Length: 390
Figure (cartoon, rainbow, N blue to C red):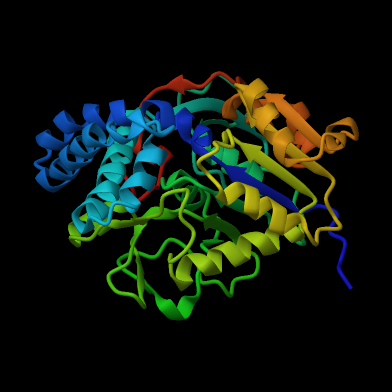
C-alpha cells in the first residue's frame, strides 16, 4: 500500500534558476561561448579554445540542415543534440568541453550577488557574519544569493523538521547548488551508486547511504563528473579537476536518454522515486522547451503512482508561453482546482518573498530577517565564502 507524504518538496531547476549567477541561458549561450575565448586565451587554456572553435564551425555547417527542417542551430540544446547524432568522436568530446568552458567563464567573471540578512539566532552558525561596521544592534550578515536559496530548500534557514529531506532535480550542468550546500555545511548526495564512483581530490558530497542528506539529482550530468571508462565515474570537487586530469565532463544533451549508462539511469530512478512521494513540485527557471523530452516522461512516470500530490508550481519571469506548454502536458482542470499554479517571478523574487515561503511550507526561522531583497553585485570578501570552486 502506498504511503501518503504530507510535506515532501521536489524542486526542478532549469537554466533560468542559474541566471542570477550570470550563467547563460539557451538563448544567449553561443554568444557567451564566443565571449569566453579572450578570457580563456588569457589563461592559456588552448584545449578549450580549440573545442569552442570546432563547435562554432559545426554550428556554421549545421545551418544547412536548418534550411530543410525546423532546427534552431543557435539553440545550444538543439546544437548539442545534433552533435550527439553526428557520429563524430572529436565533436562528442569538444561539445561538452566547450559548454563547460563557457559556464566556467561566466561563473568566474560575474561578481557574486549578495544581500543583507539579520539573525538573532545564537545557536545556529551562519557562514557570512560581518564582524565590523555593522549599523545594527543585532548581528548583520552578508548572504550569498544561492546560499540563501539553498538555505530555504535544505531547511538550513527554516524551522527544523527532522523528518523532512527534500529533493532537487536539475537539468543544469553547473555547480551553484553544490557550492551553496558546501558553504552551508549541509550534506548532499548525487544519488549515484557508490560502488561505481571514484572520488578524486577533496570529496564534497556524501555517499548515498546518508539518509538525511539532500539529494541533488543531475539528470543531464555535471561539470565535475567525468567518465574515463564504461564502468567507473570520477567525481571531482569542481570542473578544474576534470580539466586538469585531461578529461571531458560528463554532459548529456536533453534529447538523449538512451545509452547513457548505469550511472545516469540510477539518477533517473531516484528522480522518479522522489516524484512519486512528492507533496509539492516546484519548477523554477525551466521553460519546458519542446526539444527536452526528459521532462514530459519524467513527470508522467513519476506522478503515475503519486497519491500525495498537493501542488505543482511553475516559477518563471516569462509565464504566458510556459503556461501554454504546461497545459499541453497537464490536464487543464488542475489549474481550476488550484493544484497547478503559475508564478511570474525571477528566482530571486520567488525566494525573497515571504508569501512564497508559505506556499512551499518553508518559512524562515523567526530569528532571521531579510533586510533587503535587492541583490547587489559585489565581490565577496574571502571570509564570506568557503567554496572550493572558483
